[in-house]
Length: 357
Image 1 (cartoon, rainbow, N blue to C red):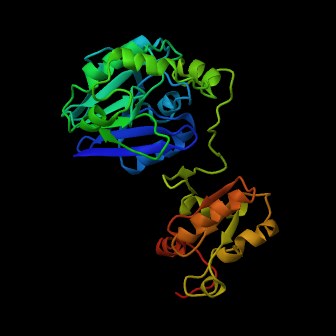
Image 2 (cartoon, rainbow, N blue to C red; image 1 turned 45 degrees about the horizontal axis):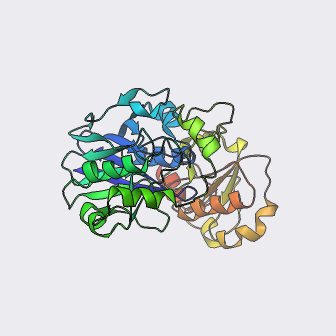
Image 3 (spheres, rainbow, N blue to C red; image 1 turned 90 degrees about the vertical axis):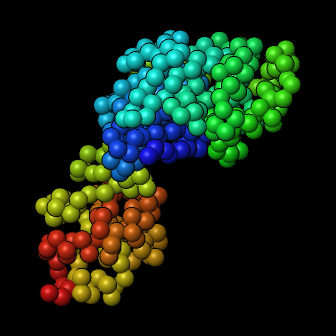
């Protein structure tokens, strides 16, 4: 069975695609975004996948790729088109190459026009294709910078994408209206730039007169992406907190394990966000914990000290996860959740104050 997830970066309206083989657990990630590396790595870990490759559909001008950071974290290789001109890749792809992950694979189809190095990745059974900025949903990528060529893009779409089965689903690198996927049949019929009886000259004239502003991040993104996302003079923006061996979850919460907390109680503030009756109830509470019920936390956050990291705890770990978000919004930078809460803490036989035997 194919593991498939479509992820979204709201800042650049970029889609990132995770594909994995459910048997071998091998996976690839298409068009990762630098600022979303923590999220992507957390999902890959939670699904138990082994990331073999990050793949780029092209050298992006609107965001920096997360390929280099994912290589540092997960050991994945970096692959993109040889025609992209990028340095630092582990594999340079040519038209007709295949990228395997377990029993599945993606075919590389050169689809230049938006940039020289644009490629489309086609799943082995031709049920899905990842078109980058070549075909968008009812649109196409622009052709006015980065070696753009409207006539080349038209030919790429007509010969390399519209030649796929009409039922093949197309997944673009971006959408600015919240649309997620389309199909070959839909775009052949309804795409106002490329569908129907529109000719190459018609399309070239249309694209020549778009008069769009350049992407805001082009001066930063293109040089960084030509290095496959490896930071140059700019500082990396995804430093992980190092005050404890924390784990970042796909839901966006930092967690710390109970055994570490028990051994380091003096180094942190334990914040219990249950109700008073629970704090003094059968489960008891962790020694030295401060009680601030979740419903009061936003108003009382200023009462808490920032001299030590804060670990939030509740009955099962849900309310305390929400508490970490409230604390971060209030300016606390060193916060973590205790997964499983007091149920897990007591279940593992760890020490409490109060409670029943």
